[in-house]
Length: 129
Image 1 (cartoon, rainbow, N blue to C red):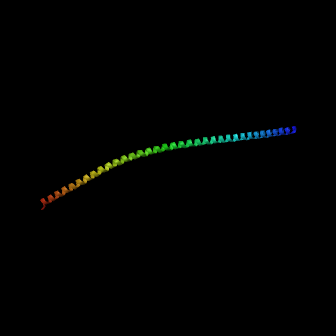
Image 2: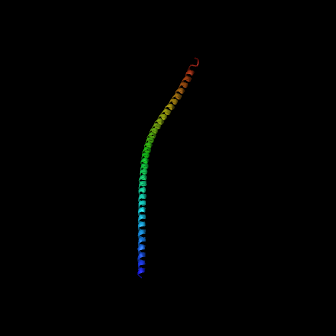
Image 3: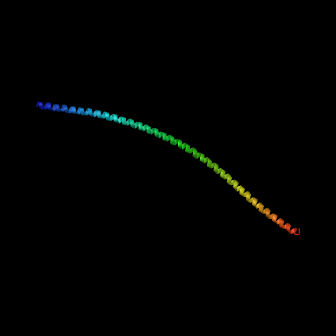
């Protein structure tokens, strides 16, 4: 029986040694895994920082483009208002000119009618001459 106890004790020692070896191996793998995860986390931080920088650059570019577009829209709006005022003045001048021309035509017609009537009346008074 003593031999069986020695064999059982020896097998427990072997199992303890195997468990210790497995634990040490697992510890090494966990350390390697932690190092890999830490490297991955560092890479992820670097990528995140780069993406943040790129996004900030795009945001600044977008803000600048919006500012330029707003300025261009304001410029076009001002020019359109000026053009509208010019067209309004030209329309008023064209209407005034049209009225002046109509009045002149009426005056010419009236004057022509008066002159014709005067010629007729003069030609009736002086037929022999």
